Length: 121
Image 1 (tube, helix red, strand yellow):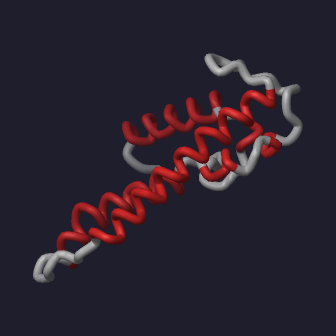
Image 2 (cartoon, one colour; image 1 turned 90 degrees about the horizontal axis):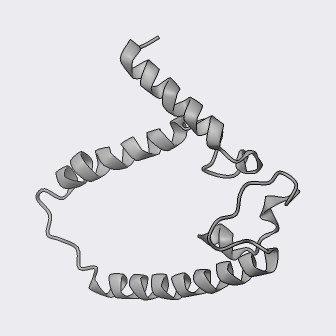
């Protein structure tokens, strides 16, 4: 049920998602076979950032987040450097081509065999 045009668009998107999805990752967190939970999270974020956040802060002074943001940004820089090194080493060890590696069902029985750094990315 629903609006026919929107239902058709959602069906098309969902079919395309299923057609090109990697079957090895279908049970991974946030990569479920159904895109609706991700859409709900996205809509929730937009509602909070466009309506609820400004409404809550309307009569309040802005928070001082300078120290927190400096520490946070430095942490992201360190984590990003670690992830780049980890992914380069993992893909080299696994024999991936860095330009383009086609999907091959027989390459990995467990796609989580790459290093843990890929999970953080």
